[in-house]
Length: 265
Image (cartoon, rainbow, N blue to C red):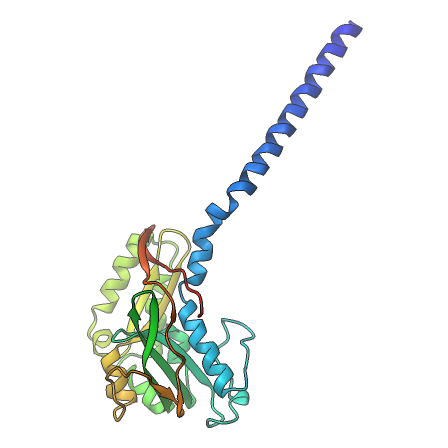
């Protein structure tokens, strides 16, 4: 009997340590491949790196090196940190030449009720480098900004935002409902474009953008929209092109995800 209990105890311990050994080697395996499964996340973080480089140059050159406290803060440079260019808050954007400028959360943008400085850097791809070819810097009054939303009201945007974020709807149902809302005349007549961001995972956002032509037509009517060899901002030439390969598109669920590897020169 005693020997039987000892045998059972040995087997139990052997089984336990066998499990521990398997778990240990599994953990080592995960550590070994971590760079592989982590890479897509790191790549996604790099997608907008060229925009960060431009923003960093603007903040360093013209706003005393102001550093963002949070990437979700309402302004890229708060009014109190804009000591040399009007003392108003600043939005900084970087976008491919000729394309719409993405402005982020639609409700946040329609709520803007104060004058601000909008700086947009437009770039073109040259081989493995991106080169800025046009820069727009305009003071935007709240009256002008609100006119670009007309005839949409905040209530209209709230309703579309609620549809996009309605978890009772499947992603495909939410996309279909959002498209139906956007077919209404007041959505089509507004200068801003509403962009629902819906995927099969967790993303449910409503963003907005302004087309290239409308930026110059409404916000910078006297600016030259043509590309330039070395554009400048407040009289200071923009830095030369920096390493940034063209973005590769891949499918991630039902949304196209942009992947790029970017490094400042």
